[in-house]
Image (tube, rainbow, N blue to C red; front, side):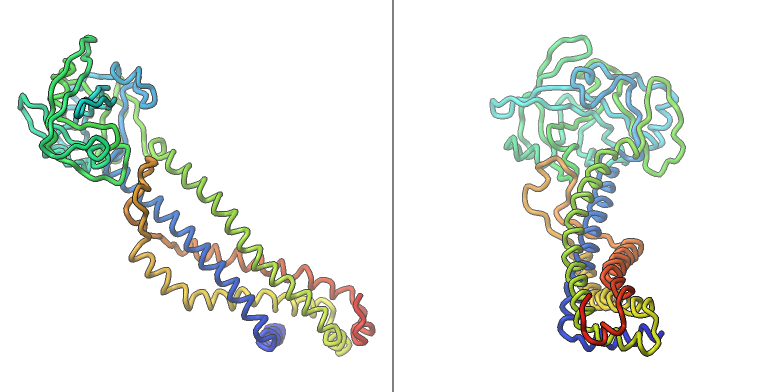
Length: 390
């Protein structure tokens, strides 16, 4: 308790030097918490959007299907068994049929993926109810990025050419019935959505499907012959790796920022010990042990982080709360890189993040304060009182 009182008085007595260190250290608190909260918010938002728009509760893939191998996609079709049909009728599964194709909007050529899906499905947020059933006309859905890159609008027609299950090429005109906007570019760029029944008819694969998407709340994922289940751990692995990579890059920035603040405290401790040698010698002569004096100076240095945490809370809590409500607007074209990024990212701050940041900075401050203070344990009280620097 005596060390705390003396340390507090010494820090307050140091005046501007103390508060400059405290202000710089408080910036470290706020920037680290804000940056990590932003990454957490992006991760949570991206995972939520990918689940809602793309993967649902998980996916059953046809055993030969490989989304990165275009040569396997047209052959990766399975027949939907009767036992699967019951789950589809109950809304627990929705089948998707995938095939490569080429489109010719306004005479231009682009390779795309045709994706057939049930118009009545509710698992994904895609507005599939706009697709027409039992119609000779091919009605399609496209995303806003696809529409913009190909200069397409609702009501436009263009030609689609595909190859059916027998290897025969065919072509027909399709009509854009709706354009949707999704935060997940993978369901948009280079994708054309149409009725499952329509695509099965076009490919001559009655009752065929490439994947089965499960309802998000269903827990039990049973094995189905000819299908391989891919859960969230597998389907979100790339997103998780990206966030980890961003976290590593951010940690380097945190380290530089924190090192600058700790360097100021380290220099302050060395200067303080050098200027206060007479005081140190007097305290030892009056009965304080060397290690008690070392502890006093260590506590003084560590209290910089305590003051910094209090100061950071005063102006940081309102600032971070406001940022979490309004979000951080992303620049135009940020999602052109294929990453699931919303128009605004809302930071997410957890108690563990705040406590972990405070403790890590506090421990680092204690270590930095102790290193120069341990020199006191080798001081000669007589020389210290005379002001002789060892």
